[in-house]
Length: 146
Picture 1 (tube, helix red, strand yellow):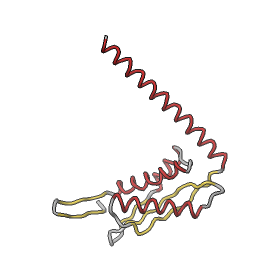
Picture 2: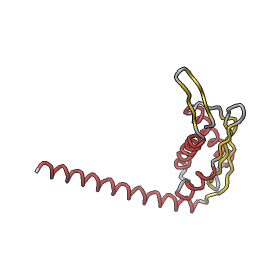
Picture 3: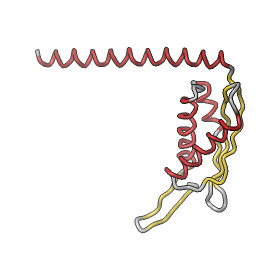
């Protein structure tokens, strides 16, 4: 367990897996907002996140993410670094000494359009499934009344 703190009540430990999950969730939200997130990127992102606990109990992070072709890569990367640092320091109360981000893929506009079409299709499927579940629940309630 990389991060430990003792207090009057006992010990608190935060595992590397929890820190990786926090990094992943932070980046996932940002990439979805930018419309550059799909199942392939999800798997690659999860594999790429590395957490190192330094001797001074600070945390060093590294990860690989895609960027949109035509947008400022440096600004995009700085946003990701800031989001990760702020989230980890707020949620886990750990000091993040550095966040190393590698842009490993550039998504072209046509790839982003394909992503948006897939997302729209997935959203429609979810909505249909939810409507079906609602209909099934209503039918069950009506059967109970009879």
